[in-house]
Amino acid sequence: MSASPHPGIDGLSTRAVDIAYGRDVVVRAASISLTAGTVTALIGPNGSGKSTLLRALARLHRPVSGEIGFADGTDLRALSTTDLARRITLLSQHRTTPDGLSVQELVEFGRHPHRSRLRGQDPGGAAAVRRAMAATGLTALAEWPVRALSGGQAQRAWLASCLAQDTALLLLDEPTTFLDLRYQVEILDLVRDLADEHGVGVGVVLHDLDQAGAVADRVLLLEQGRVTAEGTPDEVLTADNLSRAYDIHVDVRTDPVDGRIRTRALGRFNARTPA
Ligand code: ADP
Image (cartoon, rainbow, N blue to C red; front, side, top):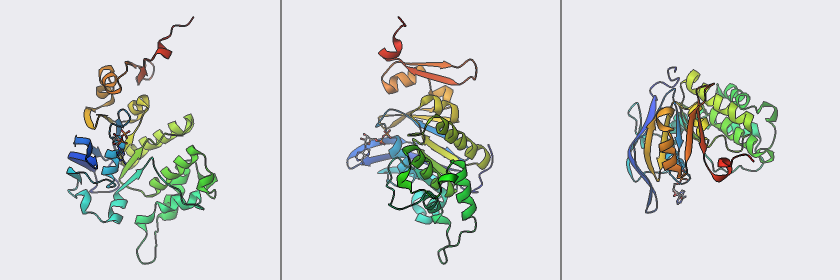
């Protein structure tokens, strides 16, 4: 782990946070932390509250109770929109692409909190945009309209826009959705590099439990709005935890070659014995 390149923003924590839609409380008593240089994976069944929690961390959804604050003591609600966007960015699952926007323009949009108010100057902007496009394999597609991209290319373009924003904290909601095998691996490698080499604190929702085990330092398991397990991948990705949370028998093994956790849900299709 390296020191944060954004001094004073070494983490973000929630304390006893409840989050609701109308009267429905969907996240209860969540006390979690994201730390500089650390990848924290959020896992759990559909509807367990992972996206809602990420949205609250990005101040897109206001909790009904509890507190969210940075490690330097700043309350999440105290920052201006621009100051917040300099500290934290979210790759959301839901987004609309304005017509006519090119890949490069979408990535440049990520620089908005860094432009000076008077003349829109951003000395580091061009280099940050170039780096973000190269890291996501988009340099050759810079002039393409975003609307013409495949699902996976568009996912990478939105991720590049987040990277160009150059924040201390990066929230990713299912970043590997739509991506083919190569880009799933490359994006998760990139996430690891951001934490290890740039001290970024990453919170990432992942459905693939093996990927969560491989990329994360810490794993949070959510069930019906509650964090029911928290710790290292070995501590959280156990057969008991996963079988209970997903309501299906999950087999967990350690790969003898790379020492990684391998999970397998045992449905009828993969319990069959060969004829
Ligand atoms: P996850 O990311 O774990 O799949 P979500 O955070 O999306 O879970 O959803 C948690 C709960 O909140 C679910 O019961 C879901 O139906 C509900 N929910 C999510 N978004 C909304 C919304 N916009 N309005 C009302 N309920 C919602």
